[in-house]
Length: 274
Image (cartoon, rainbow, N blue to C red; front, side, top):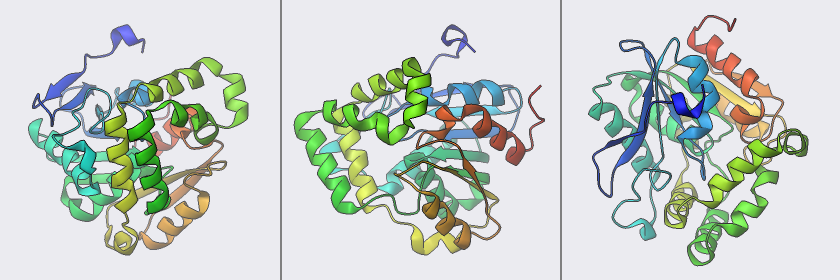
């Protein structure tokens, strides 16, 4: 779907705590929530939303401090994982959505784990992509937060291509990779830093065994940020979880869009693409 045909972004609860979102797909269809990664917006899901909105009411949103969503009243103090999770519940409540399937990548993935642990009755299926029950180290996230807060997004953006994509993808799709880096550079530093502080404290490793909803774990074979080992750790602790490794780095829904969407279709029960 071309950008001109996309439904306009809407705002829930305008103000510092506002959530920017898009709803796409047939009214009355099952709802699928898509949650973005750190330093991106809901536009990262364009390919999946276009494909899946034929069968689902696709709800995507900007994580707090990103895109059109508010940064809150005191982003300098940092966010917490429960805030990120409760934003999803607040959005669903505001739109009258009782239950949904959920797919999150990286930061969105650990948000999905929190939701499956703390609000399992609201979700029918969970897809966790390129994520972990503990992403990185607290010290590393605090250092990045401090750097961004004092110096802005340029340094983070300059090194992002190597974290997000394989060199082969950057060579094949320079415009797409470049647009993602441009979006990262435009991310509000206060919101980005506050999310870094949330990730510094986010750790759901001890609670993985309580997840009881059907779960699919997607990993990138070349992802050095959230590794295949991180995915294996989650699969061994979430009862019945399935996992698939995609030929991609960290943003696998973009680098391996067709394979990623195919995995979603199969897991969510959509007919194969024609």
